[in-house]
Image 1 (cartoon, helix red, strand yellow):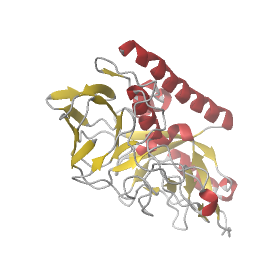
Image 2 (cartoon, rainbow, N blue to C red; image 1 turned 135 degrees about the horizontal axis):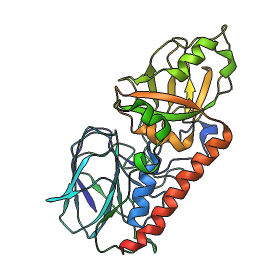
Image 3 (cartoon, rainbow, N blue to C red; image 1 turned 90 degrees about the horizontal axis):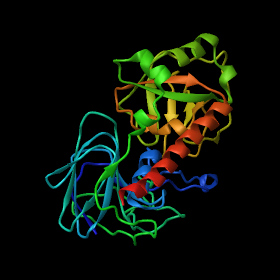
Image 4 (cartoon, rainbow, N blue to C red; image 1 turned 90 degrees about the vertical axis):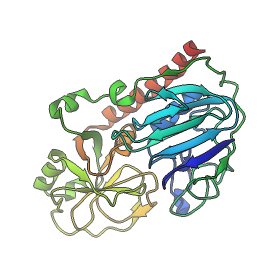
Length: 328
């Protein structure tokens, strides 16, 4: 069991999402930074899609009631178990009564906590993710709060316990986009790669130049449904009437005001705004870790480059899985 001692709002149980139900209006949900959750699960010996905790506001404190492994990934928060400090992206063995504490450090937006065996809550539509806006799945269909007791599942066969702590390089260094990051050194800018959307040619040439050339600020009304961005107005060549159509996380819609919205994990399943582009899945974790007020820059790539980016992420996670055994 895990006992929640303190937490702010929006701490929830998440896995990799509720897929296959968008046709009936059910959002994917799941971890905003799916990569961080996958790696945390691999580090503790779980299947990559096991349920963990997504921590968005700090401080967070939880007590463990049994010996187990815990990994903390995602935002570079200040983590500790009792008096022992945990480096970022680290896995450690805990004993009954140990308390995990996460404090903000000013980098990243969300931390992920994985426990060997995974958080054991009932599956709803084949997922343990919390759909916060609708109120089902996860722990009683809500965010966790002080006093909650969370059950932990049985440790999988692959979950042999390391006898000492170990960690991995965070993806912002292991998967760095150095070509663009070096060009804007000294500024807190998130770089993400984007494919052209179905309505790309409906936008004015100057608007498209602004879309690619601007640093877009993440506004305070951003959330798990969508990131609202502020910058130059992105205008159409002429008014465009569209029927509502299916959308997925990563889609960049442009409402009449001309300010883009990037759809995130809890995005609705359909919409009628024109789509200028789609953030590739391999870079969604970068957006998920972009805090309010920070800037985002878009870079155009093609389908082949998008596939290569996904392959690079998968290869990195696989290397972590193989390397994990050296810590046992």
